[in-house]
View 1: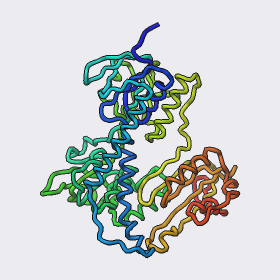
View 2 (view 1 turned 30 degrees about the horizontal axis):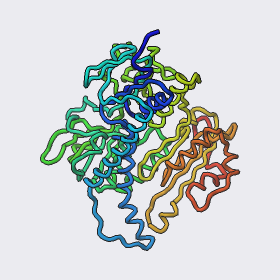
View 3 (view 1 turned 180 degrees about the vertical axis):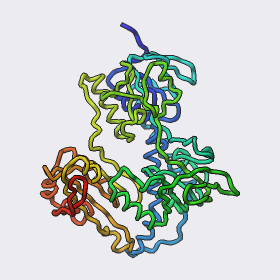
View 4 (view 1 turned 180 degrees about the horizontal axis):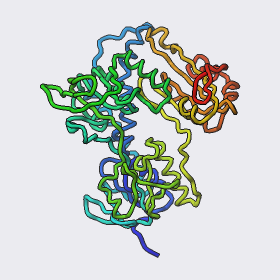
Length: 461
């Protein structure tokens, strides 16, 4: 029997890597884990967590305005970008410490270094040149923003990584992209007082979401003052006098202080040594895995964004736990990627789980669609002209709810609970039997008794 230095070696200290390493070590396995930057990964260091903190910060101007309708008088107010950055950094440092402490308490060996594959059972730390062998290796190095190197002047732009640490808040910004990262940052910067323009090559932002959600958010963003340029792209970025000049295909040249590219994320596999171990990747560089997160090399596994299955932090954690069950608990468990609830922390938020109307229309012969649009209660006194939209997508044949979509305050919180509901296979009759909580926006989900319309063979009738 071959003797290895470790039972498990994890490359990558993000959500999936830390969870698999910590739990394996708590089971008594000899575990080593290496991270070249900071423990916590994209989510904690330069993703979900700082983004949500920025979202909170950017919402206060509207809160101040709304308070006047409820009798409050808000005095002089100002915003200090550097103070926000400092507070964010302090919280991230605290969270990183918790990740490290969890690994230390489980008695995993922690390495602050990049690790690369030497062969199917060996890794090398680039900082020291040390090599270690392991019975199993987990690749959990996540993703990285697409630099869009084909764009002339791309080196003058920033990505979401740099957006969290700008020395000064720009007066104007042009954000390229139409996905959730681009949309969220457009709302963040606008809320912080930045003149914001969003440019996207597609016909509508958030094109993979239910169209009512995409269109509703689009209208809300433009009503706030965010410029949205569709069916257009940046063709070149150059330096001007005190600004950047972004030449677009259809809207001329735009002068802005900052250009941000949010054009998707790529698997972070470049230079990882995958070829040394014979690990196969797809055309985008994502590690190819089977239903149990195994690569084509029996001793090597991959979790999270590096596999390009579903790029969400909870998914990486779920995949890690399935790996533990399969490899160390003799309980083969496949990650369940169906009916994943998700949220876009735009303003207003989108919370969604299940199929969009368009997707469901292609899958089921007939749908019942329940749709409500209303002014939220808070807006009645604040005077804000925003709208909440809620949709239930129901398969007419068995009355099962196959999709729920919400645009409005706290939509993400609602989506989490609705994820349980749809996982349980609840029907529209179950919704109808559920008593409403009044007065809430969520009560609309259980008080829509008649279909707004039907969809037959993909067409509304």
